[in-house]
Length: 472
Image: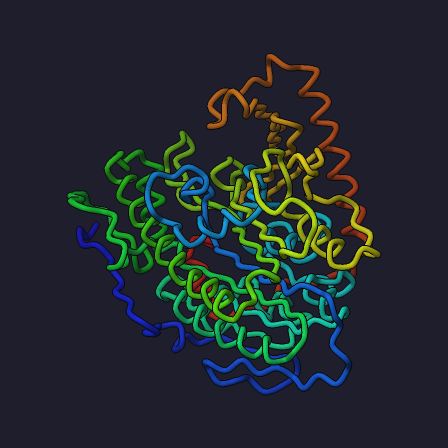
């Protein structure tokens, strides 16, 4: 394999994403020019007393690579500063270890299995309202900027947004954080000028493969190996991992590049947070920071690089930070230790904004910063059929094809190194029953939805998915 390093040098608003061929929609209007956030003329009175909501999502971001979760490297100074003003959830679980099903759960408050999303990414069902639709119906101005077409218009994620832009969905070859932050800043201005409470969704992608070194954050030094992160070589990298050819030095190199991507993305998120402060919007805005899933780097015996097909903690444990508006009377900051699900986030936020909204479960902690304890689930149907359930500090992963259980006590074994299924027969049986009941309920809900087909993808889109490791 080539021995050179793939490096991207980024300055100011220099961004290849502006040239990326993708689609852009703006709620029934003509596509807006790049750098322009066009909103409709609102004729109805703006509601009063409602907080702004800013949802910042970073694709493929492991919690343990951020300073606020214990990482020793300065990868997240701006997010760490946000966390000082916020509730930090130490054990938030994504509904799936890859983009479309995970964001489907985040956007609808329903698990992917309830939406009928399995191996193939499917469009969001029209019968299930989205987060943006719920807020728009309550008088919010809404804008979304995304950088992965797996949550784009073909999958109906734009529903409910007055302005939607996916111009920066350029795939592995695109450094998109500059473009996303530039357009998010423009949308922040437009939303603020609308005089309405707003919902702004900003989705960042750069920590996804390729892992690139940014000149501002040169974390790798002196690497002498032969790895190359770049181009279309993801399957070559995976093949090396499967053969046991990745050394500790190789893995450190990949993680150094990954950390550089995270720090670069964090710096662009910092621009958005500083703009909120400068406009004096920070205090009265609910700011939510999360990731859709994490990443593996070949360190387990499974020797997997990437995501999609396992439910280990490095894939489904994700960062979750919620800064509440200052006028809110509940706890403003602190650590929440209970296991929570990203599926419960949207209903929790809607209930806080509109007390008449009936949320089946919420993740809000009490005055002692204890969140309600619920069973939490995650699943994948991409190349494997795995379901997971969390009960307190215990986690069961069940392989639906083989029936093999993996039972872990995360309190004593947070790295999931010791399967104790044979030592805990009663707990195993109870947790397996939880999974079976949950799966049956999900299948019943999915059967009540109208059928949808996976959208047809262009050759260019298929090539992007191959380069990102989603198809082989």
